[in-house]
Length: 364
Ligand SMILES: NC(=O)c1ccc[n+]([C@@H]2O[C@H](COP(=O)([O-])OP(=O)(O)OC[C@H]3O[C@@H](n4cnc5c(N)ncnc54)[C@H](O)[C@@H]3O)[C@@H](O)[C@H]2O)c1
Image 1 (cartoon, rainbow, N blue to C red):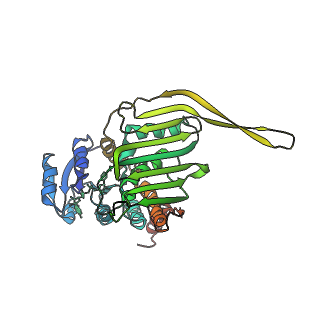
Image 2 (spheres, rainbow, N blue to C red):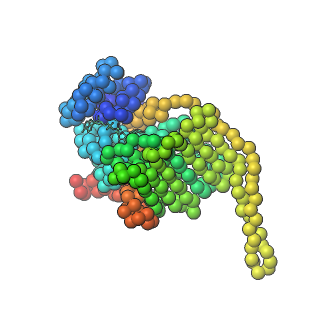
Image 3 (cartoon, rainbow, N blue to C red):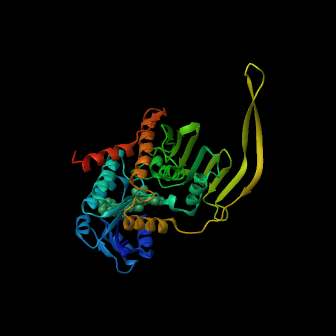
């Protein structure tokens, strides 16, 4: 397997891009070759912090270079599609910040383009690369929690009211991508109901709630809020055997697993097959798995490199990004419908179809 150092360019040197640049520069797999931004000063500041990286202000000039293997896109969501498509067409592997695009149809094209060209397209679902999310995925896969009954995710803070997106598109990709990552079948709700509020007159939802019925009668809820004076990042995952709470703001005990819950037993009452239910409460121990302290983005850029070297799909590929977009778009339709239940379309199926058509010589 080719294990040479790969060369990355970061496009977008605003708030998040410098974090990507720092992690590429620090990685054993990568060399940070260039930083590109429309704003030359920003690009120069970020490149300057990492020694030899070049400064680029023209995406076309950057993509013309044949010494760049991969491009990391940290520009506003509305620009992800044109930048990613240009990079893929120039033969570069691509990692795109969340959300992968601003609409499903754009992401479907990105996934199809990458597949047709045999390139890696990854979504930076950063939280999936935290030690906590990886441990939760493992516990769920091993059956330690039993059958998943509910997921309740809260992400609230005094946040920036973003110019281009509402609170759902800004914050909920984190919760949705984590749910997609930890559930063995991924995020596949049939529908979503969304309620949003704009109590400060910002022109977009600043407080939001999503309810997503999951297969098998389970349910997930997501609460996102830019207006909360207290910061909470907590996900509760209730299982038939145990319940797990991930409190991301508690570094001493990010994960607590409760061996407590409710058991429901039914017994036959009489010969007419009438049944009665008895509820009992399990009151067992609480434990906290040890987690390494490791920056998620360091693991993310490592996964990107390994997917490229191994010619394999990364853990959070383009279709993971698409599943998140499917829910966000359904949430938009629900909001427009006053909070009604909106079916979730499955864009990942559409992407695979489109890729198949392209590879098979169909639509170009
Ligand atoms: N993974 C995470 O936890 C996380 C956190 C914050 C932001 N993000 C994501 O990162 C992305 C960027 O967010 P941000 O807050 O850094 O935005 P930002 O506005 O602070 O920075 C965006 C930068 O992109 C540059 N830019 C815009 N169009 C460009 C183009 N065509 N070519 C080159 N440069 C261009 C702008 O000049 C700006 O410097 C968004 O998709 C956001 O959702 C992810």
